[in-house]
Image (tube, rainbow, N blue to C red; front, side, top):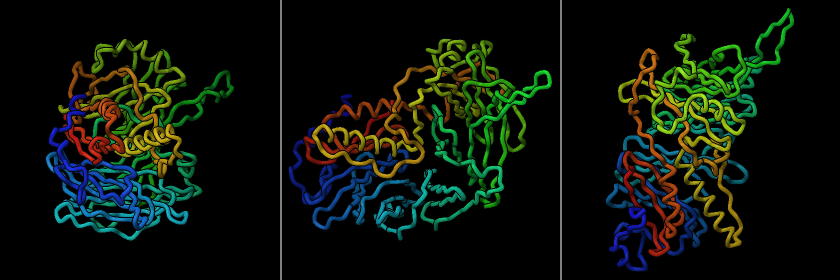
Length: 484
């Protein structure tokens, strides 16, 4: 905690008024700007960008003040304005161009504006706003962003790759197709695969992106063909994972197929995870379970692992794990949902994590978005204490509608197993390529700094960085803390 509140004594000698923005790495806006919120994002292992959103009291325009920080000094970028309040949908960086995708509403229409910031020349370029109606999900990579739009009859994808010209894709959901109702009344949860994934989404429809291909999975059930004495009994159901594949390289008709669960019994809990064109299906009852691994290209089953006491010798990664029997009983309670994730190890093997979460749990694909809006929510609650009118949260993030529950305090109840390339169980524990970071711990510490408000944060390779308005300094400051 000392690292978070140990501001340099040099800061105390800064003058109380500033001609403009930055002095000794302290940011103070001119008095005619009313600060609304902040936003932080990572650029690379050591560098980050930070946006201060304000309203100009002189011309009534909404202003974004961008700043870059390399861990030592702050660089200011010329601010830009908009006649309506902007919200961040996505961002990415390629060839020293930072691209911001910003949404706003004007005359009941949702619009999207692309803003490019040249990190070398500091030049800011704004694009003509485009239609942003029916926005459903976002896929953000380091160098590109894909925005997904969904209607009852069509799926549209807008791809922003660096500073290149946008590419647009559209797939019709035909009435006579087997996947016509695939997205009906469903929210889409995008799964991030370029970092450690502790718990996957519990949403019914999930989206994965790899090599210009969108893979949608949908968890469901179908009747079992149970036949007794010549009578068909279809009151039992079997879990199934449906696939809908959109190839952006060919832009051809979507491919639809499905995979059934491991055996003809009704499972209490069933879910799946997709990695490297392999589907990992988890199914459990109170007494047993299974992990079924299938190849989506060949449609063949590669391995089926029983979850029973025979698995105990191979279970790694959690010293508090109290056995398969207890795990199955607890995981199958009504208040819990099952999750399964797959992370690659440094030895090029696979580490599978099986877990269960409370039903209030919400997968946080866009950590920056969740923290950004969580802080707005927190500040709104504080304003309510002062009898202020509560503000909204901005546009609803379609990936998760329960962002207020995205930080779920829970004990370590998962178990992990390691598989080799042939999907054989290994009696070993291995480090994963991507490091697991307890982000909740750092957010909790940040919230305890009572001197700061309007905070936002981001995670770099080995550090946690945040910006906040210091009440003592009457200015913004950017701080960095090492990840432990």
